[in-house]
Every structure is written in C-alpha cells, then in structure tokens.
Image 1: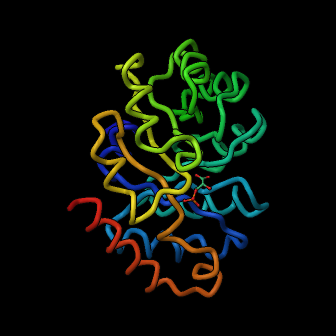
Image 2 (image 1 turned 45 degrees about the horizontal axis):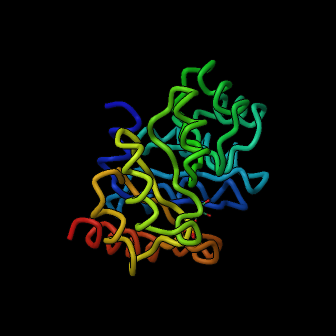
Length: 207
Ligand code: 3PG
C-alpha cells in the first residue's frame, strides 16, 4: 500500500510534538496498541529527527515528518527514516526536494491559489491547515467544487466534536490532530492514557 492509501486506511493522523526522543518508542507503542499505527512527528523540537528514527526502526508504524519548512529538513527527515513529509504551507522548494527523494509530500493549502500551486507541482492530496480557522468543513466543500480531484487531510482545530463533519466529506481522506497525544501526557509517560485516547478516537472515526 502506498503512503496515501495507508493514511486513508488509518483515517486519523496523530500530530506529535516530542521534546525527548527517548519517549518516541513508548508513544509509538501506545498508538499502535490503540489501533492507530501512524504518527506525524513535527519538526518543532530538536528531538524530531531522533524521534522519527526511533519510531521508524520499530517497523510497525507509518512515520511522517511534520512541520517541515526547508529542503534541509526534508533531507534530515528522509535520513531519519520518515516515510512521508508534511508541510504547513505550499513551498516549491520543500515539495521539489521531496520529489527528488521520491518521498510522498502533503503541502498545506487552504486557498484556491495554494491548491493551484500544489497542483502545478503535481500533487493532488493536501493538508488543509489550519482547518478550523480556514473555514472548516464548509470551506472544503466550496473548494471541492472547482477542484474535484483534490483530496484533503484537514488538521488544526480538529477534535472529537467536529471530526464527523470532516470525515463525512468525500474529498477528505483522513484528518490530523493532536488531541489523542497531549504533550503533557506524553511527557508524563502516561502511555496507557494515550492508548485509551487513541482507542476512543478510532471508535469515533469509525462510527
Ligand atoms: C498541526 O501541525 O497539524 C497542528 O498543530 C495540529 O493541530 P491541533 O493541535 O489543533 O490538532
């Protein structure tokens, strides 16, 4: 299965901020135990690359690199074993470096202009970020009229209360969010809580 099919199968993508790479293995295990073998590890901390490496080495979880802002971070993510790259915006430099590596990339796009920029670079699946403040599900419906072939992964302000609004849309392949991986819970090594939150989220997404 290719990466986009795996994301679609997972339906939910936990967006992770890890401050200590030593927590990565435990967190990955908690997500897998909760039925969600996928994580977007964000380059918002210096621990990102080592965290990606620790998760990728397990072999039982799809690991993406998130918050990738530069081509150099693409190189770092690929070297660490990331299987796909996510960027908050549509950067030609980031996308082209991903394409050079042959790694899947989801650029962020919430306007018609951003979507067209990503389409011109050959991409049809995009992160709709930040979803909540960019019009939410109604904005995706409106954008899907002219961009019928585009698929979205809404992220940012997505949670249990509005998950269903997004997943009901045919152009939404998956949603991302951090609600099942609260930073404080990860830092406290409360991995059983992460598994519970993940199990609940998976059940909600299926219902
Ligand atoms: C992201 O980078 O995708 C977001 O920070 C996740 O947004 P959330 O914390 O509102 O779920």
